[in-house]
Amino acid sequence: MAFIILNLDSLSSQVLNEDNKVLNSTENSEFKKMKRTDSEWRRILSSSEYHILREKGTERAFTGEYDGHFEEGMYVCAGCGHKLFDSETKYRSGCGWPAFSKALPESVEETEDNSYGMRRIEITCSKCDGHLGHVFNDGPQPSGLRYCINSVSMDFKPEEDK
Ligand SMILES: [Zn+2]
Image 1: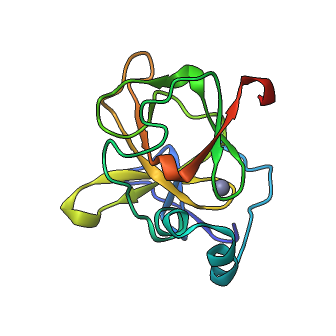
Image 2: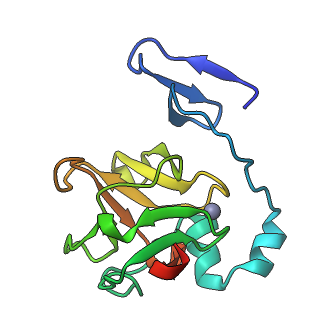
Image 3: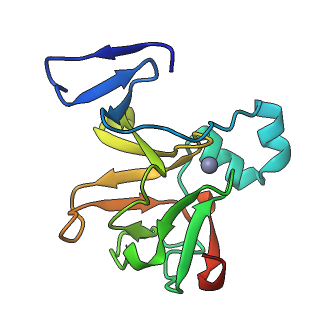
């Protein structure tokens, strides 16, 4: 990132970049971002994947492929294959979407989302910037977090591929 400013008022321990992404100041992105044009994404992704990953859509509650899916393995980004969540952190939240208590290190980025009159934290893939879902602070201890993620945004890799 070329341009980083410190916001000393409300986010003394965090850094904001020009996309208003909230980054941990100790975080260090060592991998390269995947950049594709809009027409490339349209070609690569299915229409539902494109809608959710690139247009920040949301699948209908209780309809997602992985909502009630509890096999052991790894959930990766449907857009770029980046590893996002370990099945060990998946739990039954009852919210209607796959829920995880923890994301893999450096797997996702958080951005404030004030759309629809709500103040939420959007979760995107740290590699391709695809929209995944949101994170809420009503999850199980010890993290207390609930990563509420669209099934369409993810692919599942069974244990042997981990
Ligand atoms: Zn991705």
